[in-house]
Length: 421
Image (cartoon, rainbow, N blue to C red; front, top):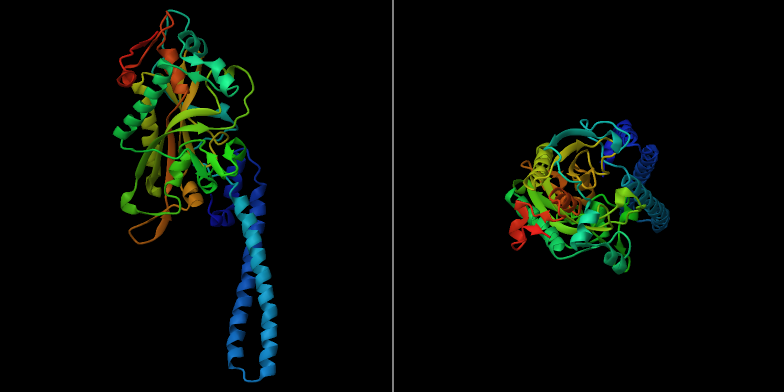
C-alpha cells in the first residue's frame, strides 16, 4: 500500500505510475477528495472537543445551578455533533482505505515503459537450446506414453486442468521440490513449512486482496483462503511485528501447493500441464532494510538462475515492463526455460522487489539504531515454479526411444532411477 502522504503530496507521480501500468488513474482524484473530507471533519471534531473540554472546566467552577444546567445542555448537543462527526470520519476512512488498497506500487525508474508483455525486454540468454537428432516430443505425449502423467484420471477425479502424476513422474516432481529447497538452504535461506490456508488479513497484507479476489479459492464458512503462492503466508509470518534491525535481512524459502482460479480457454497455451488451478512451487522471500533491497533483488535472480543452471536448462532473463509488472512490484525479472517439445519459453520464476508496499499493508516494521521504526522492504521470487520446470526437464532430457534421463542434480532423490522408461 502506498503512503497516503505520497498520494497527497505527489499525486501526479501516482497518476503517471498508473497510466504507465495501463490503468485508470481516476481513483487518485477520489482518494484526494476523501482525504480532504476526512481531514476537514477531523479538524471540526478537534475544535468541538477542545470547546467541550474548555466548557467542562467552566462547568466545574460554576455555582449557579441554572447556568450550569444550560451549559451542560449545550455540551450535550456538542457531544451529539462530535458523535455524528466521529461516525462520518470512520465511514470516510473506510472508503479511503478501501480505495487506497486498489492503488498499485510505483514502478522503479529502471522498469522500462511498455503496454503489455510483448514489450518485456530479454536481457540475456544462458546456454543454447538443445539440438536433437530426432523430433522432440511435447510432455503431453511423453508423459502418457511413459505412464507418468494421467490426464484422463485427473479430469475424472476433479475436472479439466487437473492431472495425476504416477510412479517416476510423481517422484520426479518430489525430487525437484527437494532439490530446490536444499539448494536454497545452501544459498542461505531458512526453510519454512507453512499453512496452506490463511486469513483474509494475511492475503490483504501480501497485496492479493482486493485486486485478485476473483482468482482466489476461499472457504467462506471459515473465512480462510487457499494460498495462491507461498509469498502470502511468508508475508504473514511477521505481520504486525517490529523486528530487530540486527535480525535483517531475513531469508526464507518454502514449498507450498498453490491454488488459483483462472479462466483458461482451450488451445496451445494451456495444453498439457503448463497451466492449472493447482500447482506446486518453491518460493524464496526476503525481509530487509530499504537501502539493501536493490542488492537482494539481484541475489534472488542469481539464486533462481542457479537452479536452472544446475538442472542443465537453457534459460533467459527478461525485465518486465510497466504494463506487465505485478501489482505490488516496482521491478521484476522473469526467468524462462526452453521447452523443446512445446517449442517455447516457459516462465518458471518471477523475481520482484516490492519495496515497502507489503510492509505497509501488513504493518511490518523494524527499529533502527536511532530507535525509529521503519517499514521493511520485502522481495520474493519463485525458485522455481512447477510444473513448468518439470516440463522442461522431461522435454530436454528425452531420448529417441521416448525415455527420459534423470538430471544428475535430481538423482539423489530418485531412489536409483537414472532413466525413466
